[in-house]
Image: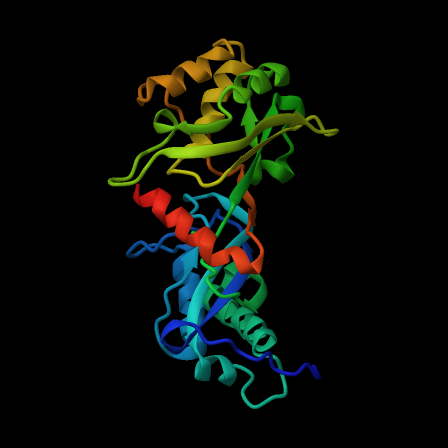
Length: 297
């Protein structure tokens, strides 16, 4: 029996408590993160599980929406519950509501997914600090992308999260081309723009490294990503890694600010959202307000 005392809730605006969930998922069985009528999505399954606990619909906000087939190891979401709903989660047991919710949401997810149990795993439930917003408070998101460049590296046990690329790639060329895209830039050439949304992002890391197993892992980190940006960056870089294009071609495409026949998306299944970083508790609100202002601009 867990003898932890319940955490003292801190009410937010409107009497609601903001709850943070840290989770991971296998994107293979899902049609992406976002709700879509008639399709199984990560958001839909998660919201169904929360609704089962509190007996009402609850909308969750995610740090970074992922496409169909894309995985997450370090995803973050928030949701708002009333104080009464939060304190009722232990069902009369002397248990921290966060611990109780973690146990119960795992059960609700298992009930909702059946044979797919384990495809979504909530690792931590906590009361969020004041001003926290899973999306707008984030400092950066980091993705990884695995590439096996040649049949000798094609491991059938890893095929569901590794790109099997037929031709060898030159890591030094990949890094030379990728380095030219770093910084605050307009990534329109590497995004599928959404109406009214900016395509200006700060690309903080874009690098490739070959591991001891021979597999190349790309690391892509930015303050935020526009739609399809990571897959487009990797897909375009492959032309450089093969020697089809010169390293400077990536920067030329950036400056062109247009999408064309060479705007190729790398396959989604090797892409993993690895981590979302946040400021200290006292800076959450200021960061969220700053990010919202940038997006509106």
